[in-house]
Image 1 (cartoon, rainbow, N blue to C red):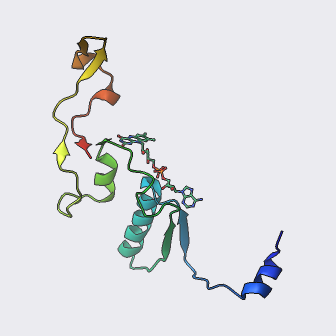
Image 2 (cartoon, rainbow, N blue to C red; image 1 turned 120 degrees about the vertical axis):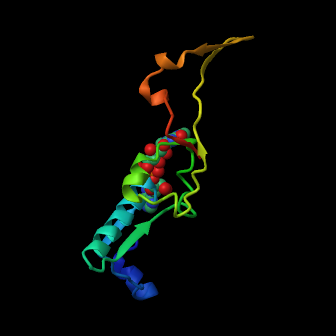
Length: 125
Ligand SMILES: Cc1cc2nc3c(=O)[nH]c(=O)nc-3n(C[C@H](O)[C@H](O)[C@H](O)COP(=O)(O)OP(=O)(O)OC[C@H]3O[C@@H](n4cnc5c(N)ncnc54)[C@H](O)[C@@H]3O)c2cc1C
């Protein structure tokens, strides 16, 4: 295995950038943490260097598997997300939970569904 010293001798010192906070992972948690840190720094008139490292080809490349989003956390973080043009344009209007047989579909009454299947107030994304 090549030691750090050997790498330095072979390639020379590497460029380095310093940050106050480095967040590994540009998913919702990492991005929220970065945004919140910058918000808090701006509120107190301080400058904070925040770096988000994402191994995907771009931010979002590994996270967009969802279909329905509860905007509660986004509203807490960025209350004016609608005015800022966040692309949440399709509110949920109806939930249907179906049991499928070979030839029929049986619908479960909405009032029987647990809270996690009630999507009113959420958005299809
Ligand atoms: C199939 C599926 C469907 C889903 N559907 C929905 C839905 O409809 N609605 C909903 O609200 N939620 C849905 N979720 C859940 C939602 O995706 C997660 O709750 C959310 O992505 C978690 O965010 P996170 O930031 O904690 O983690 P992640 O989104 O997993 O983000 C972590 C990030 O860190 C990066 N990373 C990891 N290791 C490193 C490293 N060493 N260096 C650099 N970067 C790194 C990854 O590439 C990734 O981008 C779904 C999840 C799955 C798997």
